[in-house]
Length: 405
Image 1 (tube, rainbow, N blue to C red):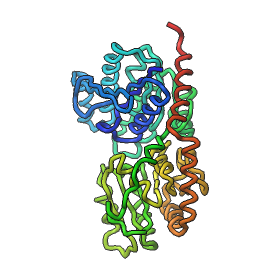
Image 2 (cartoon, rainbow, N blue to C red):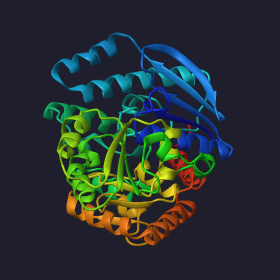
Image 3 (cartoon, rainbow, N blue to C red):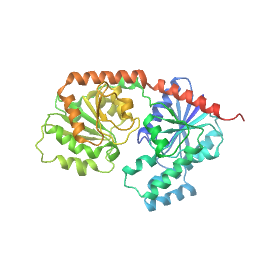
Image 4 (tube, one colour):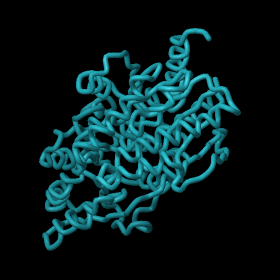
């Protein structure tokens, strides 16, 4: 098949989060299966359509600078930043894909719901399209300081793309259920998880945490990797870290962008002056290679998110064979079987996380057993080509739903 994946987020230029990570893995996996793959991504500055090729994937970037984009900028004056991005994104993807379609004929076009890449494309262009659910704004914007008007308008723009898509998929059963019951989407949604490229982890060198980050040799290490924001559970971490460090001589490593200043304004001050046995280190935002190297070197992965679907932070920890403590919320239990491939903690309960972390700190055999089971689970169920083939099956079903021209 000739497949177009649309995602404003796409590394390295706009690789901001999980949607970009999914598109990056998915594109390469589809190429491995023998398909021709084009990615239409965003750009940090206005530019004409420009194209490169990486690992067999043809990557196009485009960002308009016209009256429509200037109109979308007006929403920023009213703090409706999410709506501004969605309207600008929908327009740029529409113009960019129209230009690509002058040169290429695509069998299928896939886009995420969050970002509204397909709002105009799905409503206007007569092509088979799939919207894949990752994190609808209507379900996650409550975790951010945004006006109610922004939530309403942003959700409306995304809903246009959803309503006019040929087919729908979701990365977790939890999210499909949320979409059905909280967003009123009655249509069928195909459910299959995100996929991950295991050889990338196997070929990546393991970081020397002592040389790289100053961790004392032989000390148990716990990694939190993700954006330092409330949805990822960062507000729970001051209590979790203080509780553990008051009892155990271990090192916490936090890696990710501190976009709201939580680490500097809240977490570090909460630990200052306390009688702690171990230490806390903030590493800042790491690139993919640095993060994979660190993930393979630590002992425990901490994922205290209060809303998740099928996060790559968990898949990367599983691929690295690490012991994981994660939330029992959302799609996490679909990835982690409690007591078998990781430990689940009660969502938004710092004491529950501390108790599970304490079990792993005291029991190296349990850490090894859970980590090995997590890795085996990825190999059996979440390998990139396994998931990509399920996507291809969904693509064929999508194309079959459209009437012949």
